[in-house]
Image (cartoon, rainbow, N blue to C red; front, side, top):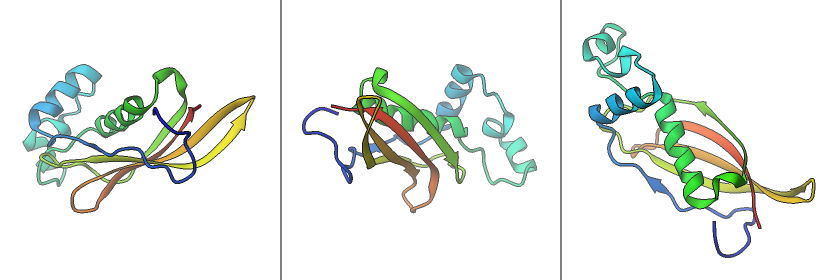
Length: 136
């Protein structure tokens, strides 16, 4: 992130993701190697009790990583972890968010710890996480 120094409470600009389409799921399956049919085949999803296919959890994690790399050089990333909280249905429009929780110095390097989340328009949080980045 360019500009003023990061401080506790600084929010990253939200990353609004385009609607998750079946094509998105198929392309991500090809790129990631996650070909689990519950994400691609309506009949399989329904046989598992779902109304429709839904996004791979790692797709949301990838979008959240893009929020980070849109705001920080990739080489400044020190850690990144997430917890999957809910599914992302097909046609959903996820929004990725981040906020600085802590700023500290570790081994002579200024670092910011960010709380991260992905949520849907109805308020459902599908993913939560944390990242630590080196910052000026």
